[in-house]
Structure formats: structure tokens, C-alpha cells
Image 1 (cartoon, rainbow, N blue to C red):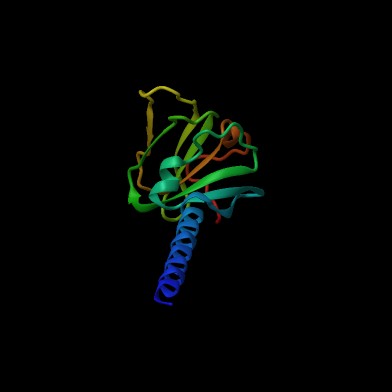
Image 2: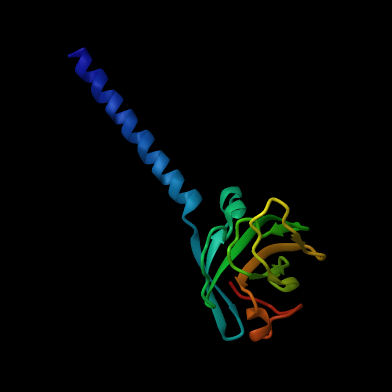
Length: 150
């Protein structure tokens, strides 16, 4: 009888641990989505808002449609550095301040598969970064001072 209770308790604990692990996995590696708009153009953006999703970014993606993006919500407004390590597609990297105004753009940042990749850093304090398909910022006339909504 005692043995059966211990087995049941062990199964309950194992089930709880597995459930907690699955929840943690989905919270860390499955990004939330946000609608980000500039004038009449909108993106369906994956949200990177923890150290794991921010570090992974758009690594290993083979394509990015014009209406897709990644929105990084950074822990503080300041100077931030982004690189293209293991990123397979060219991107425009848009730096936004706390008011969601564009303060910097790294246009046509190229993929980097080596260990020595250039860094792209904002000159003005930024709180958010939006990565979009390369060339799109010019196509939709997105520039310094433009305001995004999300």
C-alpha cells in the first residue's frame, strides 16, 4: 500500500515537472505576435522580449515576407548592439525610442556566417528594435523621426 502511494506521488510530481517544462519551453521559444504599423503599412511581428528570444532573433530563418518582422522589446532604453550571426537573410534594423519614433536605421544588414560579424549600434537611445526585410524601409519611406504604432 505504501509502495503504491509513493509510485502515485512520483507520477504526480513527474507530471507537474513535465508540464512546467513544456510551459517554460513555449514561453521562451514561441514568440508572441504584435501588429506593428507605419502609416498604412503593417507587419505581423514576432515579439522577442526575454534574453533567449532576443539572443536568437531571426537566426536560421530562410525567408521573411514583407509583412513579417521581429520586434525586440529591450529591458531598458539606451545603446544596443545587434549583429547578423547565423542570420540567413538581409535585414533593415530599425531602432526606436521609448515613444516608438525611429532614431536609427541599419539598412541592408547582410547575413554573417562567420565568428567575426559586424555590429549595428544605435547612436540615440533606443527601447525597441524592429527587424524587417532589407530594402523595405526605403520602399515605404520609413526614416529617422517616423513614428510606429504597436
